[in-house]
Every structure is written in structure tokens, then in C-alpha cells.
Length: 58
Image (tube, rainbow, N blue to C red; front, top):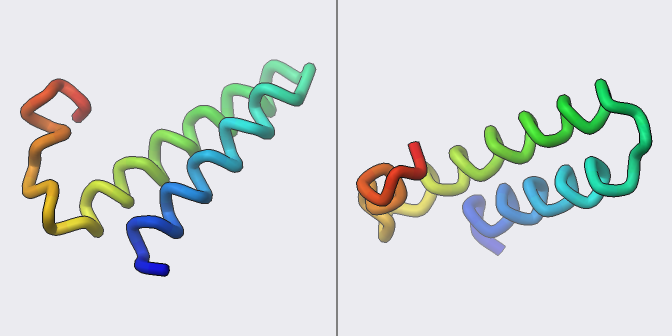
């Protein structure tokens, strides 16, 4: 598994935790972490070459 796929897996896990928690602070932190992991995944995948940023993702 490449870095990009691993980072995306981390992002998905953060989203799962955010959905499962009732604590607002934990939810906010997990959502922020998911965004960071997603951005890192985009940066680690050279095949995207900035496409997510052009589409408004960054």
C-alpha cells in the first residue's frame, strides 16, 4: 500500500471516529485531522498534480 492510500485510510478512520463521538470537541479535532490526512494524501499522489486544488479542494 502506498503512502497516499495509507493517508486516505487514516482520513476515513478520523471521519468514522468523528461520526461516532458525541463529544463536540473530539468531533471537531477528528474532522480537522481528516482534512489534514486528505491533503497529505493528495500531496503524496503525484498523479493528481494539483487537480484537487484546481477543483477547489485546497
